[in-house]
Structure formats: C-alpha cells, structure tokens
Amino acid sequence: MGKMSDMNQEDQLALTQAVMAILDEWGLSANAQMLVLNLPKGTPSRALRKFREHTAFPEDPEVMQRLEQIVGIADALRTSYPHNPAMGTMWLQQRNNRFEDRAPLSVIIEGGLEGLVEVRMHLDCSYDWHLDKQK
Image 1 (tube, helix red, strand yellow):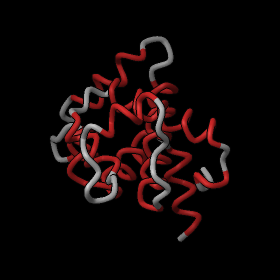
Image 2: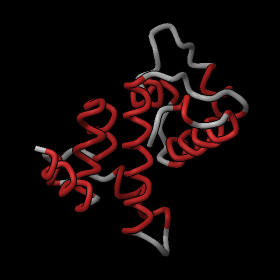
Image 3: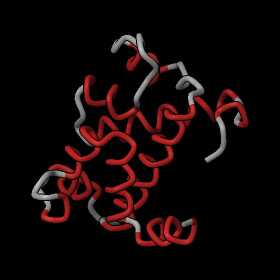
C-alpha cells in the first residue's frame, strides 16, 4: 500500500470507507476504532462518521501502516472463511491459545501496530514469511 498522496482523492476515500466497513464488521466500538487506527491526537470520535461518508483518513505514516495491516487481516480472514464471512468476525472475538487466551481483537486493540502485525502473522503465512525475509 502506497502513501495516500500517491492515490487520487476517489481512491483515498474508497480505502477509508473500506477500512471503516471492516472495523464496523468486526464490531469495534468508536473508542476501539480510534485506538486501532491511531488517529492523530485531537481527532474527535465524530470524525468516524465523516470517514464512513465523505472524508479520507489523514495522511499519517502510522495510520497508513495500520490501514495496511487491517486490510491484510481482512483479506486473510476472507481467504480462511470464504463461504461464511461471519466466521472471520467470530474468530476475532473468541479467545485463542495463540494469543495467551485473549481474543485476537483484544490483541489488536491493546497492542496497537504490534498487535495488528501479530494477528496478521498468525492468519497470513505468506506475510509472516515476507517479514522473515526482511530480517
């Protein structure tokens, strides 16, 4: 995923709306969405409605890294549960031994970017392999 500035305004808005739909599908509260996205300080929670409708996310390196992870997790869940999208959300909400008996969504919310990467690595073997090759 490139920088927001590398995308036209229509693509920026489409990405923003797609990510908001993913976070809504995951059942995250407004507060949790703000934490997961790590929106710049002072962003009011009412901005979430604007992101769903007509405003693109701010171009912020941390936000962009998180968007990439969110989209990667959503893609991996779609691949894991191609016939039942609700199963991906259920998987995110259920406790998992892999995450010390915590739900993957808790890891994402509490762990910030590292939590997003940890959940993505668990779901997406090719992403985990890609990270290993970079070391």
